[in-house]
Length: 416
Image (cartoon, rainbow, N blue to C red; front, side, top):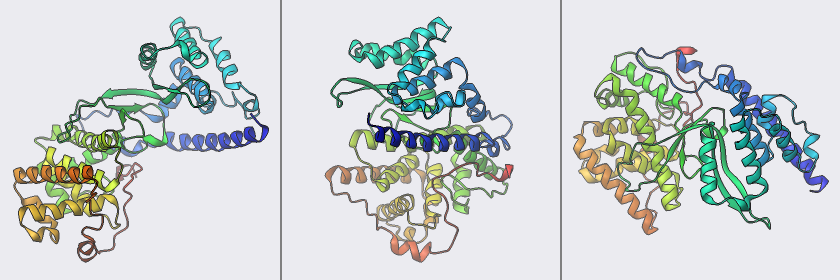
């Protein structure tokens, strides 16, 4: 590697390391406090504690994870979290530093089972041709038992075959038991449960990864607290779902969305899963990434599954003071409902939707889902991003602080 390229690489890693350390400090000093402060009796809080997990990376499993990231990605960040300056910048200037440091780590591993696994990973890196897909699958399963979630793939673009990691995450994963209510696809998708902070897992999303979504437990907990307070007739000052005020429309729907207080959290969690699963299937099966289409299909799916919980999401989208894909999707849905039901006033008065029969709304939601899907498949792309703009400024032209529809928590006032 040329000297200039090495210097650029080192400068890049310096920025990454400093940024990541700053994030880890900020998060570990109270990132979850806002949620822990208002846990209701009888509700268990199972989200991993970020601060304790930064300590946990110093255990044997965490060290193996850190050195695998070093070996395959030449990234010393996690090794340096375990012990500061283990791999200083000047060491990174040496060719093959990541292999040398991995071997040094390997020589210090005392647990026989862990040593075998760590040694196999070195061989995978150095001798990729010796491992077939079945062998890599077995190695992946062994790593998962150590809380190291990986996906192997082969890279043949550098003159020789290499085994690379599509992802390498310290945590665990759970296969989704939720089936999508409207897509017929039967994909195996996992919810990732990270034990460290990663930028891509800061808020719930469908992730960059083919077989994985992420549900942020804090977001579920936030909305659970809001729903519980609404059902108890208490005041709510925090923001619902993706940053909306808890309006009378949302309160009305939340009061009708759950069969019992005990079902609140499970239903909200399932709603998040269906939402992200919609985006994931749209990306995987159709290679389609238009945000408005994704939000529109997700909205139809959540309303079809749980009419009133889905409508509460729709009303939260309508509360935005900015024109974004979420709000446009809700306006498109309203327009379709108005046309299907013949109730044209719905476009100007969305509160009318909440009084429609649930069965009719499920039917209309399914029809709209299929209509959008047909348009998308045919290439027409009739997902009118301009739909409802006149209504947008005539009815929702009020001035409110623009909500953050990509949420960073805590948002609940109980801990403030």
